[in-house]
Image (tube, rainbow, N blue to C red; front, side, top):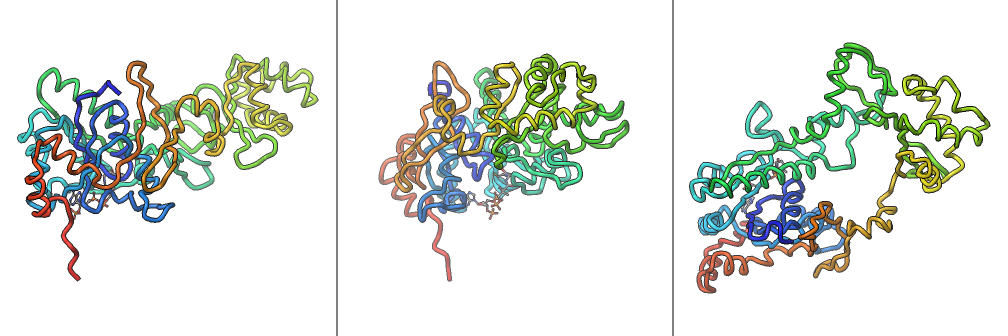
Length: 422
Ligand SMILES: CC(C)(COP(=O)(O)OP(=O)(O)OC[C@H]1O[C@@H](n2cnc3c(N)ncnc32)[C@H](O)[C@@H]1OP(=O)(O)O)[C@@H](O)C(=O)NCCC(=O)NCCS
């Protein structure tokens, strides 16, 4: 964890989009101080599986961070914030629009306090434009960034994807921006403001749908399995189509359970081998010479018949058996893996992508590992902090405060919420 050693981050992020980014930066070696309101990041208590223990929602997004609580609605809490700003390289937040400004800390003010600091900010729609004032969650971003309108089947409703492209996808974009700004800061001495909007990030991840949107001006999309035509105004939903130049589909396999599917890409180069292998089993000895499927253009035109043949073959094989057959033929394919499949997968375990951790409140649990593998600074994954676990440690180590200074700020309510009046 040497890559970002020495980089200190004041992490005001909450929920998923921001914490994804700061967890990644922590795994790259940054010292991430999770700066929480006295009641903590709301996700600590959301979707709890164990009473009184931090939820998996929280623990899975906040590993390798230190936690301190500071009340930003208290004058002494703001003093702590300002002192930390002076000692950090990056501050990051994903509050609703205007929250930090209401605390009295615009980017201009933060930059004035520490000209070297970089500020990372996630908003649903950025700080400009007609949508700037709106809050956003994952599926709002998927809806407004083009993902939902292009996911599902044309005659069914739009669907969200299971991958959290609006939250985690945005967090990844922010990490790239922050690292670039850090590089520039190290050259110039000057920090800058890095803004990533969830809607923009989803649009970026849907790039190929915009390729197709513009191709429609010139003609139908021959690789699509659903109807398209020249002049169609929008990219339609296209089920499990491959989305690329090669044909692809999810094929149901034996024993026809909900995840007994394999995704098969019938690359141009592999058709002959595939036809020779499956043809005899289907009772079609010369499938390889069938003119309906001879060239890629023919297969595009007759793809539903081609998929029906492959599905008939798959009915006699499990997804793993079919995978072996296809691998032998060099056909790109992948069984649809359930979370159970993945949790028990040798490859996944071997690559440290499902990591067992211990936690004082919840005992053993698993986190998804670090997908970016640096040869000289591999990530060592450590549990998420309990609320305020490191408040005193940060004040002592980072700010150099004495016990009496800390006690005075505690007395003034800097780290706690005032008791609610009845
Ligand atoms: C996610 C989101 C919708 C949640 O909305 P929310 O629960 O109303 O939270 P907000 O961020 O708007 O506000 C946070 C509140 O906590 C308060 N707060 C935050 N940190 C605090 C601290 N250290 N001390 C005291 N108060 C604090 C803020 O003052 C604010 O309260 P206010 O409205 O009275 O000013 C919103 O934060 C948002 O749109 N974020 C940007 C987009 C985003 O990242 N969404 C994805 C989340 S995965």
